[in-house]
Image 1 (cartoon, rainbow, N blue to C red):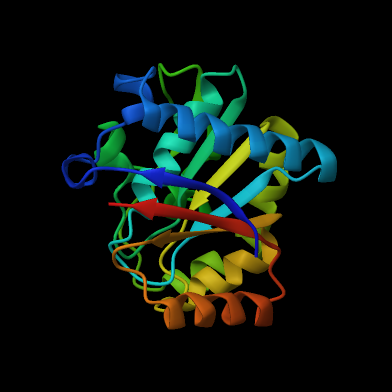
Image 2: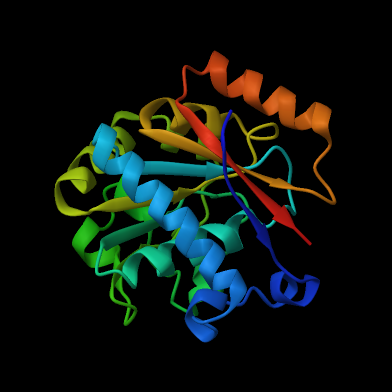
Length: 221
């Protein structure tokens, strides 16, 4: 498993869920995100991979904040980016970007809304956001159905990058289902929190799901 980059983030940054790549674009942290972005663009161009699932072994490891900042960093380079909040159990993307979660992914998957009506067009470059949507009592069934696969296939035709923020891989069955239909998986590890045994277990679980584990981002608090 390769390491894409080590990203240092202060405790206050994670707590406030700041978009550091937007508010402090010239900071060292933003520069590290640009390095991750460059690596992802190279991998995408080389292997024609567009859909990246971002997950972590456990909870509270900074995964969603990392995903949001990557999406912003990519959009700042005029890439057309779709950020999907597939963490239906504990969604947070709407809070990070301060957008409505009235309609979103669950509504598209249950045919209550069209993708065009549910997606948010942000003011950050060409970044578009699909929040989690209404609460779902059956997240594994929703994310594991054919509609989710079709949504990602159509997104591949219209976006340069699709970033999928998912629940932690060791606690949620649906993450393993999503991993199987995404082009590449990025595992977020927290140096001060992630247990090495848990990280190794997460890797084994992803391999069993026949997922393409592309690398890890080490988040240092």
